[in-house]
Picture 1 (cartoon, rainbow, N blue to C red):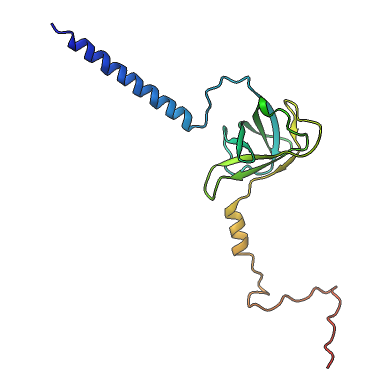
Picture 2: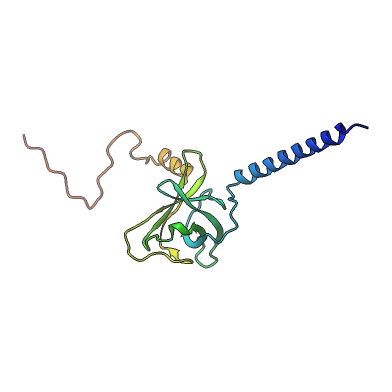
Length: 175
């Protein structure tokens, strides 16, 4: 009996375990999850009227640098606004109280993310505080539709729009 058989089986098994672990890491990383167990971030909330395609674990950025993730999205049953919980890394704990948040898109068809714009307030946001100044997501299809189909019936031929009834009369030309 040769020892070549068990060694070969062990090598194939180790290779398969390594391949499975690599696939698991790749799948985990592609879903925007990080490997930390928590504890190194603090929550902030923000209210938005339109989230667009914002998803859980979407990045939170300041100046293009990721400083956190979207942790939770809920609907306020009274005001019917979306309440987004952000997990911000502790090393960015000194965000001014007048920081604003907006929902933006990476490129034309990229993922949505929350962009924070710090203000100049000496007070800082504490864990659990709400960001007061927010800007909802822009729906590009709705905006394009308004642009394409917003031409009025009176102004379709390139004629100037009629003056409103309460406008002062135009001055007469003098020869």
